[in-house]
Image (tube, rainbow, N blue to C red):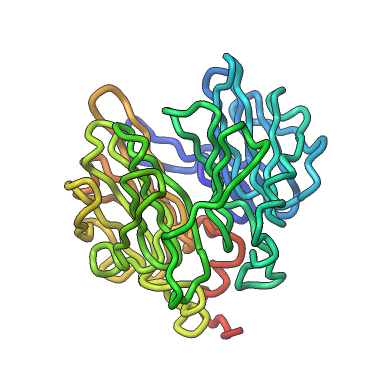
Length: 345
């Protein structure tokens, strides 16, 4: 499934070789995220401007699930097992976090997230300058913990399932161009104290759950605005990162992201660009990256603001374009900044 600005496109593989469009759904809607609950047989789709939808039939039909959800701009939906049941969390704009204990039938706001000191400084560069909760993750070593990324303004943690929150600091610097621009937090599978945090100033790393920090400004000496970050499910010393050479503020002037995908084989210490099968110059940004894994192996999928989808079946060493001409895969209006003839604004 590919989340585009014009609905969800499902790609299928014919006879295990060629890929084509198998189906489309929620056409006309800007899809920001897709979350699959395999055990429950449900798929959730967060939308920009129309809330949240769920499907119980593999995406053939969808029902709106917004009871108690005050925002129509849903950026992320995350699932977490708590006391033997699946609990959902939805991050929205303006920045807020909602919780559902009945698989999306109703939502309750975790309102104390907005009571964190300094919340009045949260913002976002593009109009209407509203911050959002971009991503939510969980600490497997601490089952009551939630980590929320507010873009832009804060990296937050709760240790009581969202009842109270505190800000984690130290990754930001006084001369940063992008104020506390946290895109996501990815915990190393073999050590939950190791956090990798892509953001507007590069890749941040902490070996001790936010007590101390290091920074890699441009992984692969290229990716200055990373977002997507994945660990190999086979060996977590191997990781992948993707993003543009600089921030969308520069895209407004240059109308190019000059994006790349990079790989690390030493637990994120060093990175090299992956090139085989990818365009020599990637004008569009890589806005989404995911994996399909099985026992002993995995495939990587990457999608761009230009509506292209790339696949690697050999740990990122070579890529094949499996779709083109789809609607853009884009966080809010990123694709507009990169469109041919786009005007600076």
